[in-house]
Length: 354
Image (cartoon, one colour):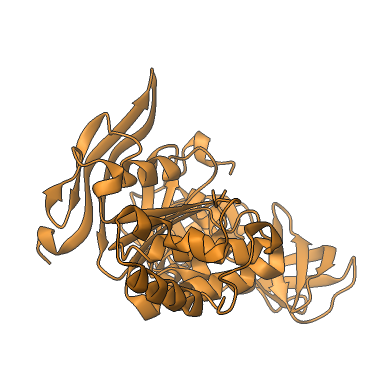
């Protein structure tokens, strides 16, 4: 793919506030019609990237290309980009239709054209018949839809969404995740979404960019990032994981405190210190003597679809997700298939806690 076929290309972007560097050498491209999510903990720099693309901040160093052309000198209102923030910033002195039409009225479009486009937007966000309602009469989810419609009516090529579902309750947030994905697919507009919620990212995204401390740690599809995390931070941030220290004795042989494990990883130095990651659903509990390590059930938590079982072995407390019911104190053994063991470079001290 040629560079000018990317919708957005961040070229070595740095951003500092005073002596504090919040973005370090960000290299990232966004394809047309892609739903890309920036995912990471608060303060990792994801919203700063969004604001730089939107024109609300200038990078300290680097460039931002839109279809191959720099847009650093173009003010926000002239970019073919619109933004939806967590606080929707709707005009309470205007009704729903007037809020949605605001951008078109600024452009002095004909009234008939504006009315037609407003009705189209209301249908798109499932608010037909709501045009004359006041903003204060709407629920949080309905207000969010109005904010999206107001942004989309201007036909941007890129829609920036900065944690727009953060103020909604759990059930409504789940519903809006599906609605946003449907809208994006129907319109074919590129969405750049910012969140710290891994479930949102996994549900909606074509591509996820995992960030921490102003750096990009991994870029990939939701499936790739979940199944093949690049490091312990990503593994721990995307879903739950058992993470333990290991020593790569040789290719396909990794030693942890509980003993030696066969794996499918290679290319490490002999006796290199590594991190070993196993997802809870990949920790299989068997009868005593049938698995690799002996253990005793320490805690059981019912999670609806399954049980979360903590199993204490000689040197580690393993987390397992299973459908079988166990009792506190049950003797079990643990079995882990070689292809479900992920060996990766040892994490930095700053990566240990998320």
